[in-house]
Image (cartoon, rainbow over all chains, first blue to last red):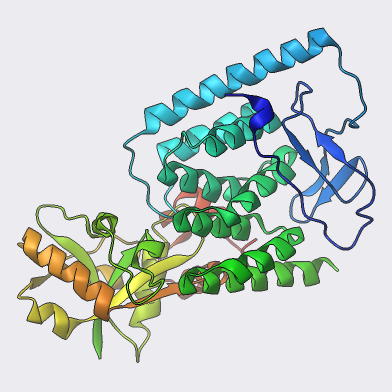
Length: 221
Length: 168
């Protein structure tokens, strides 16, 4: 897989802060660039539910030494390889909504260990279609439920990306994940997903999600 | 009117996209039998049995999120020739376990397939939202339907001992 071919994730504008602050490149813990975002706020941003979170920020023009880039790429592929093993070991596991699976436990531990690089690797593996839909659903649900402030934004971005999945099961899990995450900055993306949703049940779930996020937004005001 | 309740994981499979939407085979994953038996709950829409069963089942999980289920009139199940037996449920709510739980027993492949089609064509696919589930579990704790130490640790963490009604 080529990292450069991965689909980039976009953060939503929350409409309350200056969205012209500029492009922020969310580097992995070791400084590479597979996921970018337009993050409202400055070099740190505040989680609406998890307190203040320091977000690693390197401007797009930051130069990175060749050696550092090589180290970062090596680290990323090691993480990706580890994730791939977790995914393969989980093949055949049956998942039940709301029940913590062995796979979900491993994924959450993996995220806590490798932080933003883990999210980048998850994004790459999911978008390369090497994961089963059931596994993707499990990941999206538990990424939303887990508490880990250092990856709060990237988890939200990854989950929201799948509101437009071709798979209705994946879209459903993205809605569940976002509901658990409770970040009102995804309101616009949820509204957009509602406009396009053709399953009446999913549309209703998105309406519930929208209501929950709007209530959180009002509480935060 | 009495219904049988079966919880559903694969909601979108049971959901109707349009009139030609056929029930996919993976729906049978939601009707996984054990010893040819299927666990269901008997509820009524006009009393609190529905909320009590949903809450009890949601309380068996790790995450307090949305709960999907299908309600099917008991009369339709009887028409399929399926045998029902009162057995103990496996929730933290003793009343639900001893009073409202049934097993559909001695099931055949033909009956499971017929049951799946009946659920798809005549059942009501319903849900309780995350907020509703959190509220109902908090209420159940306060009413003594089950105890906090019967919940799984991740779920229990959402219901602090002195603040069950307002989980974080």
